[in-house]
Length: 458
Picture 1 (cartoon, one colour):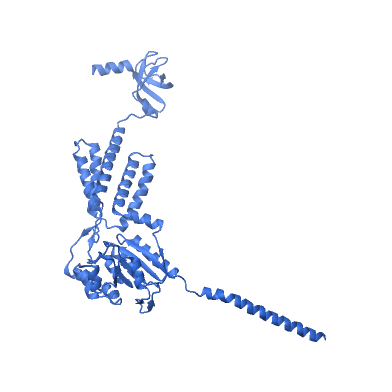
Picture 2 (tube, rainbow, N blue to C red):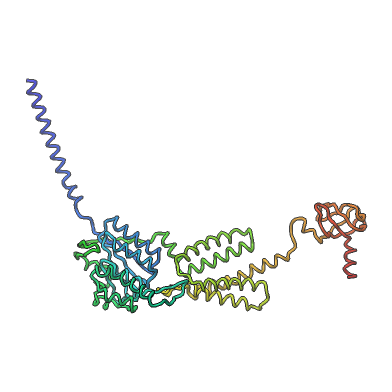
């Protein structure tokens, strides 16, 4: 009887447990199906605006990595660039070719360009598109040393051209683009409108807006650089902008030619003021910081040696103006030298960028005035009498308190203090004496009246 009761209880427990498990599975089924629903497609927006330089290359690289981390469906790079540095261009292209997320490069808005390095970047993308009224091309490599465009012999020129064309062919052919036509942008510096680029099979689309481009790309199958195929599902997509970080914005700002020139001059002026007026502290600190930032920018920018030399000559002329009377000739020469130095300072052969004329004059004129003023203060201070210490008493006048006998040490009062003093001749009590020299804590004096008589007779 007990055994029968145990079997009934066990059977009831098993049935109850199975029922609870079935109910749990039924309740969990909707959540599982919900998790399997595809997420909303994500398009990561990047902007390649301005010269292609290391800071901008780092930003593009980080944006592509962020798109991969967030499983984005597409990276859309909106580009407007006159070109830039070849090393930064190659870095961007390598990350585009190796991106796990398809990359579309769109030259826009209307009036934008993807010239020089931008042309290479445009053709490296999975999808190349341009807005109406844009252009690309003009990608001939130029060699510059110290900011000067230089001529090269025929052999070296061929090597440079062939290397650039081989690099362009290495990925444009795999992208299914017209490599032969693309090479003319290198060999002949040829440029193309958006219509010419589309007809010549350099790009894939001409679209008025990025939104129109994304609508046309929905459902398209792309052949990636590694040969795999990807179908873009961009229905009900969301767009996320990847912006420059605060650090990148700051670095991108200081590598601008105008800002670089301003930092260079502020650094020079601050250090100059500190050296000529030791202990001022603030000019030295500010000048040191500006000088370091200018050196960082100089490392990234194509600096012209002639521009640097002209600025050095200008500073030298300002110093000489303070020392010699030239009726403004040295000052004027220094102003012209610094203005031309600013204009020649940064000259990128790819972009023709440099310090603006307005910035050159706005910085040069105050710098010239302050430099001459500070140097004149230094020269004038060398003629000042010492204001502290025993040296200040030289030629000062005191009073013989109890009188002085020739060659015998006595006491005088000077500056409200009593000092031991020696005179060569007798000096009556209460008579004025003048200090000739100082020997330790003993003063050598002479009667003021006797010194005045000697000067009169002389």
